[in-house]
Image (cartoon, rainbow, N blue to C red; front, side, top):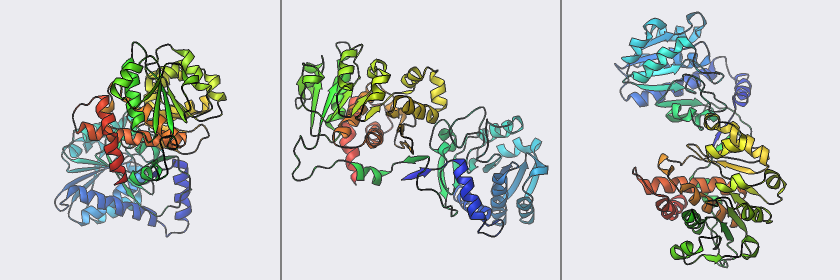
Length: 476
């Protein structure tokens, strides 16, 4: 599992480690890892042109020491100092001893544009509020450069703790981060600035519970519900789908398609799209008597394509089983009822729906995804899966927020969220907790999106059809 820790936690761990190490040893560890990553990216170090963008913090020191290592291997290294009087003195001396040069910030743009490699050491993980005005032209030049851009620990100008970007920020091809991932490296919009991420172990001792965690294949494989020899369709779980309307029958069909592939043994459908559902998936158990009389289920999915059917939403929420609420159901669900439920509740809004629930503009949610998902979980006393470029899953009880690493832009297609709802609901019925059902569902859904797309447009039904392949891919 990939984990990320807050700036405060990282700083505390660094202080504890530095107290046990010789002075400067921790920075040398970081610089060695940074130099190795830069050398790998360059391929041929000797004769290459490397420009260091150096601020006043420890990131600048890391860049200077790494630059000295590259200079000793024959690279032409130039440090552009944004605050010469506050540059890391020992790192600067090391660079000069290795044959590196120093340039004024005013000469930096031309140097950056002609470099084979640009190292961003402007601002460290404590930076807030975007780049200062004097650094903006250099960041812009780095964006125009033909060379690769490597960020030290975190791209300068992004918020390490939240992933927010206020103002200008460096866009890196590679971020070399030390000790642990920082939340901003895993959450958009900051994630888009980080490029590929390489983690360098510098020996930090970190708490058991992180700020964020991202499941990997092996984590998902351990959570997937696998039937045993004595299992039957009822022991595997039955999921109820209350979705669709006369206007949106397709939402019901797509939600059922996801549910059938989510690990539960049977799917019950309730709603006005029964004929469309049974025509596409004859194995579905269809009822027109409403959720109360549909028969026993271990979990419900309510809301996709529901229109204004508040009665059905209320009936489902009254059930004493886990419930996944999506789409129209989010708008129709009574917040007090959701907060008062004893069984788990999983809400799955996209940014627009989350904004409506929070009473803010959509841009505020998209720019502060971590804040938004935590606030929604707190307000509703529910687990919240915030869909988007980086899907997040937060529990109302706090703890680590799950970040899904498998998403793809091709999933931004009509009906894709309905498939995810059915898939997540089926995982709930199979016995997974709300956090696990949301994060495993998002993982499989994202992987299915990648597998089905293959770099080309796909429809929601293609994503549903690819879930079994994604499942097999995870199990190896």
